[in-house]
Length: 336
Ligand SMILES: CC(C)(COP(=O)(O)OP(=O)(O)OC[C@H]1O[C@@H](n2cnc3c(N)ncnc32)[C@H](O)[C@@H]1OP(=O)(O)O)[C@@H](O)C(=O)NCCC(=O)NCCS
Image 1 (cartoon, rainbow, N blue to C red):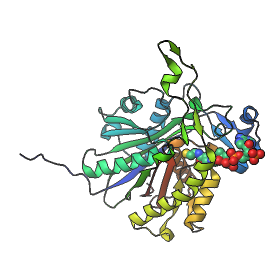
Image 2: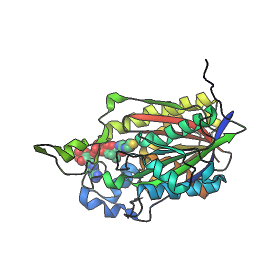
Image 3: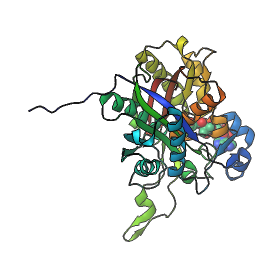
Image 4: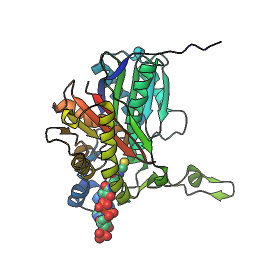
């Protein structure tokens, strides 16, 4: 007996991008006192002028649904056509169930497969890789990939190394079949030797405690060793970017748009320099207004470029994302 296997569409592409930016704008002036810093220091070291922190009603689910509705509208795809919802996040504060199931239900999908993935700031690019493979492999006709964070919930406002960096928001992409290849091969990997560089400070058991041993009762915030992360990202990620171009067969001269994870403006500049990115390539710099939104940063940044006209439909774009784990992923895509 042999089991029948399936194949899907010959090619996949992103059909639409959507974003949701929380309503509350937090300028540097509002974070400096708690970390004995200054607007000038923050701008010089990170390029961040302001970030957005979600209001209580702007939950992970609410922001995901809002970004997804916009992506579906732009893609011209109805919720019932979505066969799988993949949510990349580290700030849905229920260990289980996945927020993806609630998002799939609220959107009105027809009981789409729905699950969350944990790949930190690289989560959206992992989701795009999975979505493309699902469409090509035949396990889904259309896949909704969401990157969403409410990092303000897990950021210690007194921590000098992170309080000014992390922020909230959501971005979404609808992935579906395509005549031409629209999503190149993913280059992804991990370096678990550096597991502790960016991490949730305590295990949940340290917070809750065990019988006879009370826990701290304090929310486990994110911690980061900024310097090694900075050095690793600036050099290793330029190489990963080049590998993604090579695997897609795209020369750097033919690239139109570079959308790196919005971690830090100096990392973005260092990567562009080490890749010898031609001047004409448009570079995403959403971090200045939005801060580092982890899994949401790439779709948020691309959404801004589409809105402002610096990324146009049909352009060739390079995504590269990296973060806790350390985990990373990069791919070339065609702008929807
Ligand atoms: C966080 C980051 C901006 C810090 O910049 P840095 O140059 O590495 O800063 P350092 O920690 O080496 O500190 C340099 C100096 O600034 C001071 N400093 C640190 N944080 C400060 C703050 N928030 N405000 C003012 N001064 C600060 C330090 O005390 C130190 O002072 P000293 O030289 O007198 O000892 C930088 O490391 C970074 O961007 N890292 C990568 C972050 C990132 O991308 N994370 C996400 C990955 S997904």
